[in-house]
Amino acid sequence: MVKTFHVIISQDEDGVYTGKVPELKGCLSQGDTLDELMKNIKEAIELCLEVESEHPEKVAEDQIKFIGVQEVEV
Image 1 (cartoon, rainbow, N blue to C red):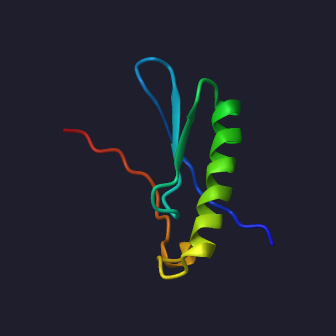
Image 2: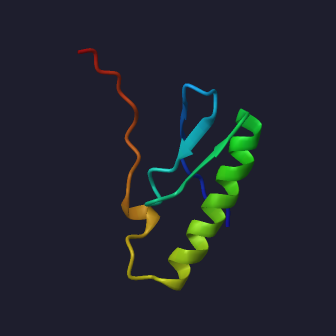
């Protein structure tokens, strides 16, 4: 079964891309390019899902709902 996850991507001052999956607690990765980040984050998602299957008492990803990203000016 194919599952879909959202990846929030940012880029730091050194140009490194960071991705975080809000549906999976603690699931993040990085890469020097967007292609590398997406390869790495896919591996991270697979590992997070594997850990969740071994520890089912954790919150399931379908209980967390991604809403969106907002900008705030201060």
